[in-house]
Length: 310
Image (cartoon, rainbow, N blue to C red; front, side, top):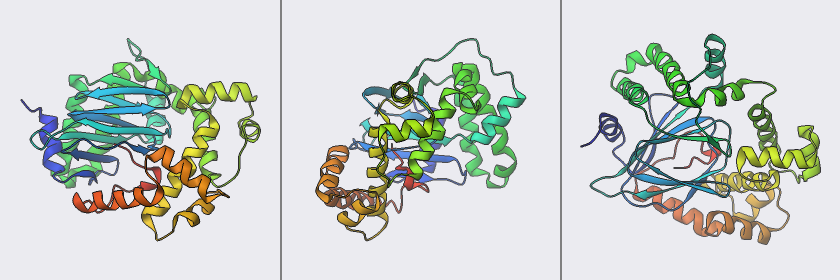
């Protein structure tokens, strides 16, 4: 029997792919067949598998997420996702709710961030099962889509309750680290933002360590614990993601995109692009456009520059 949450998601996303909603932080997903791996770098968010199942990879770690599982991503992380359970009669359904860092900070100041249990993290993300209380909050969040006049007043209240329920589910320490200026996650988030601003620059471990004010060995361990990869691997993925965004959203050719993100060798760019995305730049863009046309998806969602993943 379908849950109330799955019925609401199905009601509001009747076409294939990812859609934005009247709620600025909410995106809905629907797939009727297994999907190829899609890479993205979502910001702080909670992603819920409502129906079906997906496989999520971060670095070398792989996690099967059945219906009822959710993942919290506290910082911009290179996540790969693909749908592994879906059909026309029972499509994959999911949602992503972006977490506002300012709301988390305000909530942290006004709340005693303590919970009875702690959910383990894997390379910076938290994976957990939906509780009835948390599911009820998301049901009320989606019901706001049918009452647009209520959104401006009620959505901030529901958002705060989501944070409260996540704390009660064992994620208090993650929120503390997100807003703590001297915390591990906060430091890695600042460094990732710097890497994004310097996506077209030739960076070395030494230059990144200097920016982070860490030794190379401490940097590697801290960064790998947070992201599942080294700073150089992360920077390479940022460059390739940005090149992919350019190729999708403009008429740039592969060689021009390669130059814009700092590659001096188009052939090296093509090799690394193919290794990351599984297709050459030309074939990948053709595949993306065919998929967009077949699913009647005008766009992924605002923020394609972050390479929204499933």
